[in-house]
Amino acid sequence: MDSDSFKFSNAVVLAPLVAILSIWVLFWAEVQLGINLNDYGIYPRRLSGLRGVFFSPFIHSSIEHLYNNTIPLAVLTAFLFYFYQSAALRVLLFGTLLSGLFTWAIARPSYHIGASGVIYLLASFIFFKGILAKNYRLVALSLVVVFIYGSMIWYIFPVKDGISWEGHLSGFVTGLVFALVTKVRVPEVRKYAWEHDDYNEADDPFLQHFDEHGNFIETQPEETEETVEIRYHYKKSKED
Image (tube, rainbow, N blue to C red; front, side, top):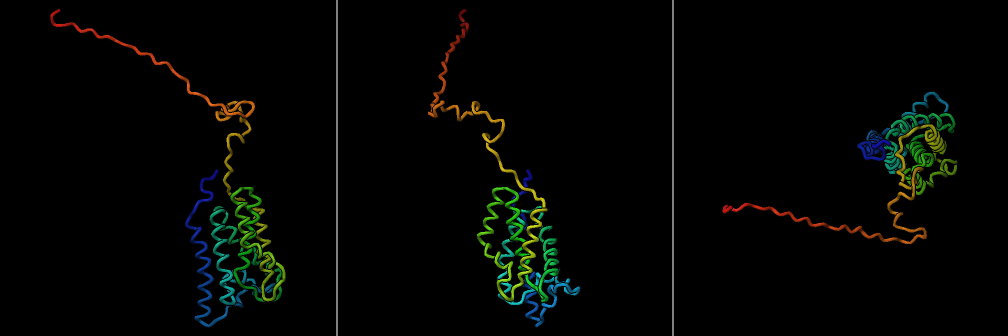
């Protein structure tokens, strides 16, 4: 199987770093210049609101909003680029756009901003793809995501005012769709000798140390008789 699977690369560090810097630098620019870019968010079912599909993940309303999205975005992006290298960039870019379009189609008439939709996209994709791939490492990763971010599931429903649950729901559904349709390179699980179909117990050197009742048989090394060969060399003397 592909030897590049589950190996560290520069993208595992660079991708989260670029994502975090982009949202923090833009927020810093808003504060320094005294401007508000919320109007560049997604405004549903309005043509001008489509620009938010591209810009909304970078725009945040407050430092608290920005901080709450920073760590999950960094962690999940690193997970994506480490465990799903072959599909990471495709899932991140096209998944973000599709999630934004879903939000534009179903959301309430308001400006929807923030990277939380991308976070739900990544969490959903990593969880469902790990289960579907049936690889023990990816299943373990899915469980880690559930353990750390499982409580986020409640926010795909309208449980709190001021939160774009539609954006969360769009990211979650998009992640599930991409998990179903995206093909990834996953290393095969290594099988032991006894797991192969052609395995024969009688030929197993280890099992040969046990009798039919399961008792251990200690085999003694075979003794070999050493033979000593003596050779005589005769040398003529000078007197002869």
